[in-house]
Amino acid sequence: MQPNTYWLHFHSMDQFIKINSLKKIFGEGEDEVHAFGPVDISIKSGEFVSVLGPSGCGKSTLMLMMAGLLEPTSGDISFDGKSVSGPKNDIGIMFQDNTLVPWRTVEGNIKLQLELRNLDINQYKDKILNILKSVKLEDFSNRYPSELSGGMQQRAAFCQAMIHEPNTILLDEPLGKLDAMTREKIRSDIQNLWMINKPTVIFVTHSIEEAVQLSSRVILISPRPGIVDREINIDLPYPRDLSVKRSNKFFEYVHEIQEVFHEYGVI
Image (cartoon, rainbow, N blue to C red; front, top):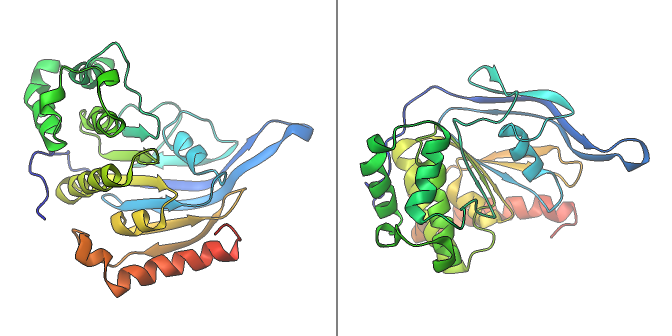
């Protein structure tokens, strides 16, 4: 399968992410909850890294801190040498619950991201059409979120997150509520996007097979308080279609990760 040529052209930038001694504690005294860390993670420009771990290990907490939406208790996160000190508007973010506003159409929601960044919408007309075509939503651009299926809403949210051409994309379980067939379709969309433009992608998931299918590297997080248990480089060819997913090497990676979480008693 060839990557979809409608995907946007992302700016090339030697951006990388450095996470040093990052920790998050909620509450104080008897109510204190050690939610995450400390962890040290380095991510090279253009990597597709999945963060995999059991529920409650702090994966979403990590993503919020990376996005600048949650202040860490200690430690530091930097993008291309610049520390995160507040919300980052130069990255793409997509969560399990989409951020579409109900009173705007699909196209209106995409344009909203440009408006919030004071970008000239007229310069993005063709890009809006192209990205809608890439996920087969061009015939639904004037529909409201309530008129779309759950899968179509997530595809629209994907366009919304990507339209300003971010170099870094944070995906926090964006496929968690989708049916299996829709999930597989959007996995393919995400893979095609990364193959063509090589943005830096950090992808949080509960699915071991999903992590192996998409990632160049998988970071395994222990149960709470989440720390990095180990990192596994996934040496499989792209695109990772059915033939790759049926290969012995694919199942060896899946089994290796399953063994780690079996030791923790979470599977």
